[in-house]
Image (cartoon, rainbow, N blue to C red; front, side, top):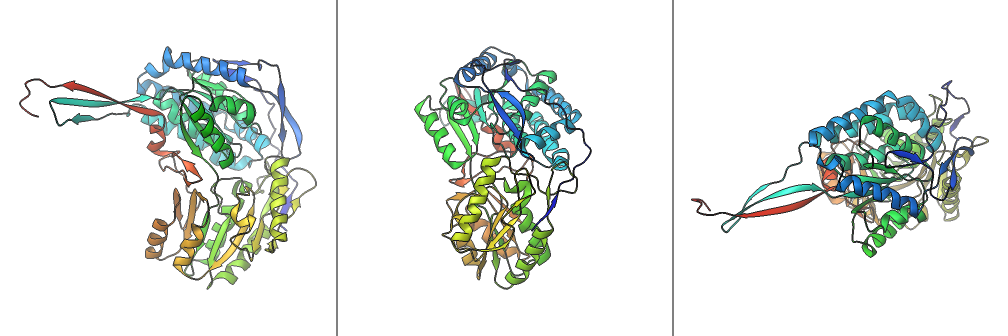
Length: 499
């Protein structure tokens, strides 16, 4: 089994400061007065009670966002001025990095060390990237075929509803909010009910930075109520959703049935990692393990299907098992720990049920497969072999540290296996052969392909899904254009010497 650590650092966990809704620049109780519990996945104990927003609260938030868009200064600021305020927002995040990392740690089970080094800086730097783009939103001048000329304007789309997942509460908050802010939009953000705390903290920092009231509103609540109210709201112009394919369908249906608002969806994945015979076995094993246990496997691009060419299969299996058994699972505040707890008991039980499915269907459990420790929602890194393509563990998105390990012979077989899924979010290729890398990367139907690396995200590199992994792109300048729409302006030309 994996090593389990019960120790922790001596970091003093901060008191939770923000638990209400944030509407029109103020923290307020829900209209109903209801609250709900958010729990610490390290122990299962209640961290805080948080205001429970519902349709009435979404209505108030949308009203504030609509007022701020139609009459407020934010869309009317120059791009430079919006960017300047966004830069200040990013600086405030840097100043509060330890407290923010701790909040995501006790809300989502994320590693404190990774939060400080990766997640919180990524949020701040995503803001800075789009702040730099805010004054570079340009249309085109068009030479028409008749006696007319035209130009295009890129205008903010309006009021945006952002529905944020629980696995990356900070990163996804800023992947959505940053380009929308740069474009001049206003917004209502619904964080996941499992992880509402950091979104409220960011709303507080946004106000301190000078973002006008009504531009950012945060409504905590449940998907079936607050999320549904956002998706079906007649005065929201766009919805950006990240989460499961099942809920993504509901969001799209609600958008169509209401005001035909535009939708972007980043949904599930069952991403393949293809390891060819010429790979460095030790490095390939590191990539394969990290691809499935990073963030406890709670990541949509997890490389949960690992295909290994038969020439190195046995050697790689041996290395993988060694590395998995040495992986340290435990308290995410402990700097020695590499994997914290699953986000909540529901997800913990779901992952364990898939592990039992794998055993019943005849897959061989090489290592792991059990809970870790005496309390909290910890699961050992788990590797199955002898996996068949029609098994649930090979088809379904488990969203946990569970790997399905399979063998292939030829390049064509590897491509066929990689594409044998309803999803198309990401894929990895490990090879020293540039021809193989080029052929395979062009043949896999997925939104991002990593060659000899994995999880290589960057602010300037768009990613998103093919097939049932959704549509629309996060990050890069493509994401900025999700929050803009094109207006063409046509003018007659009289007595011009040139047509």
